[in-house]
Image (cartoon, rainbow, N blue to C red; front, side):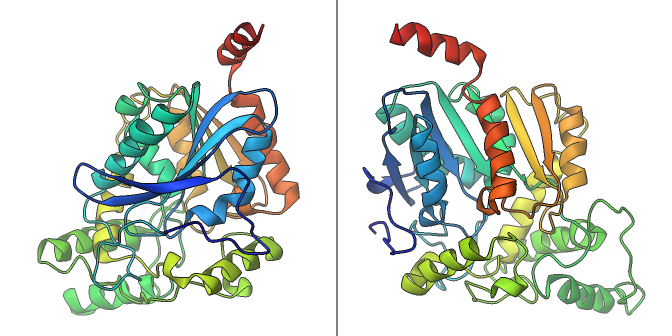
Length: 357
């Protein structure tokens, strides 16, 4: 599958794309671009979030190129232009979160490290950021630093996917003969959704064990886009509608709601980072940026995690929604200022200066 070019979202100059095959025989779509300008600062591998695709990041890719970075982007298995995992291609599915680690390691080894010189960095969003944090023991041998935006470290109170909470409340009422799951059920912690994390994720894992992991989560559907007025990703209407135009032109890039398998696998990886030793065990230097008005992941849980991590710094952008790189310029400018201060880093900067002299 070639990259989709849209008048409002043109393919950045110099693109080369293709497929790489993982050790478990899944085809992963990738694309890469050389740095623009005379000064080279290294290479950035972009890690997208759930249900995203390479084309959504064209503006970010060009921003990175103009900063002197070569860029590699790819689609996770089951979404975008990569191999789908269910008969219904609109289902956002994965059976084991380690499969995402396999996708990333394959792209880094066979594309990023094989094509462009270091230093090497990751720029990861949401689910992609969770992949990085779950695999730093291996990634610290492949990357120098990582910038993570709105990592999926907790699910906030309130509805995450349309119908998900109400669907699991219905299941909980039936399993407990109406004792629990009434509409008045409150989260026991203001930082996360008790119902999703204590009920939905374990139930999703259990149902997956019985062969039901490929079903949509309760309330899920195959819709690949929503109206701007209903979105919780960004306050930038022009950027949001630009992505919807790409999906209108190439609906095969989109996926709908996640499956029970995805929820169970991703939830398990997310909750594993709640262990006390998880933060101090992060070895890869990371800059973590959170959105002050995030309604998709829990910003307080992100801050809690970074407070336990010795190799991570934290920046919160007040007022921003979940997709910091797709937000209004007032928020994006703050993101890029933090990125520029952290990447490539003093040691790498000095090495690049010595190499260029």
